[in-house]
Image 1: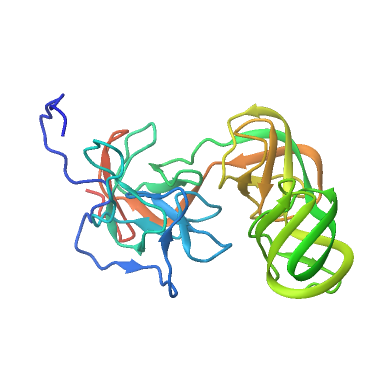
Image 2 (image 1 turned 90 degrees about the vertical axis):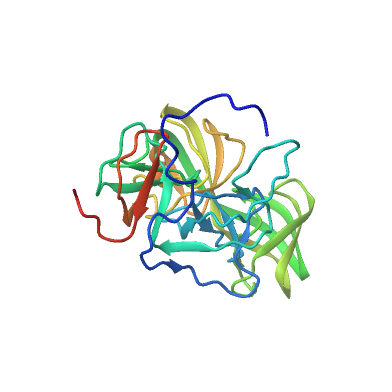
Length: 304
C-alpha cells in the first residue's frame, strides 16, 4: 500500500457495491455454469447485462434494461502488479446479480442526487446517475441486413460472397434448408465478417443459397452531437423499436460501422442514439454529490 496522500474529514459511509440496508433482496436466477464475468471482466458496484448470445456471460454494457446490480462480496482478485485494491472481477469468475434490494452506488452524473429520484443507467458502462437520462447522440446513418451467399457442410458454413452487412459470432442465421435457430459460434478462416468459413451450432447440409443473419450493420456517415458506444439504443424512421448497438465495427464512437442487434434495411437518415435507460424500480435513497456514494433501492423511499 502506498503512502497516504489525503485526509478525509468524514469517513466514507461504505464501499462501492455494499448493501445499504437490511431489506429483502432478490437475485437473478441462473442456469448451470452461469453466471460468469465476461471477457472484459465485470466492475463491482455497477449494473450489468447477461449476454443474450450465450445466456451466461455478464458485462457492464448491454441494450435495454440491465439484468441486475453487481454487489461487493470480496469476489474480485488483485491482478495488477503492486495494486492496492480492485473492484474488477476477472473474466470467467462466477457472479451473482441482484435485481432487488438496497445498495451503495456511485453518483456518476453531474448533479447532486435527491431522495426519491429515479436512477438512470448508462448502457455502455453500467454507471448510474439520478434525475435525468444520459446524454446520447444524433447521427446520420443507414442500416443494412446481414445477407451472404454460402453453403453448409456439417457444422461449417462456407461464405462465398457478401451482399450486405457482415456476419458476427452469436448471430442466428436463416435460409432455405437452414436448421432453425442455428448460430455462428466462431469464424474459422477468411476476412473478418466476410468471405470465409464459420463454425455453426448445428450440423446440417445446405447447398449454396442466400443466407440471412439476424444482425445488421449500421453505417454512420456524420455525427451531429455526442458519441456512440456498445449498448446504446437507436431510434428513427423505420428503425425497429428496441434496436441497439451490440458491437463495434470500424466506428469507435464517431463515423464508421456498428453492429446492431436487429437486422433490417433503413436508408440514410437521422438516427437518435440513447446512451442510457431509466430503471423503473430503482431510486436514490440518499443525497450524494457527483462522485459520492448514494443509496439506491427498489424499496419505497420516505422523503424526509
